[in-house]
Amino acid sequence: MPLGFPSLRVNHKNSLHHLWCNNGTWWIHYTLHFDHRKRRIRRSLKTSDLAEAVRRRDELLAEITIGGEVIADQRQSHSRELTEALA
Image 1 (cartoon, rainbow, N blue to C red):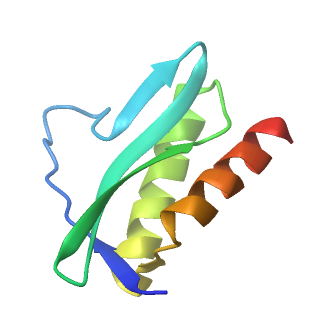
Image 2: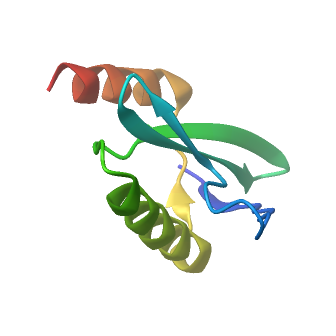
């Protein structure tokens, strides 16, 4: 599986960049680039607290900026997301 790295455009005037709240739970979205392709990633931060969501976002983006993120096959990715959602 390829390793993807984020392409981040940060608007410093907007402290909520890459975040959105869906029914009380904060989510992050970002784009990973790999093998001349890209994939948009959406992931739950599993918190309803904005300060905690910002902390988790910053931690996650720093981690994948340095080390990248393994890009799963989309079929595996959908299966994993379904499993996480049901947990």
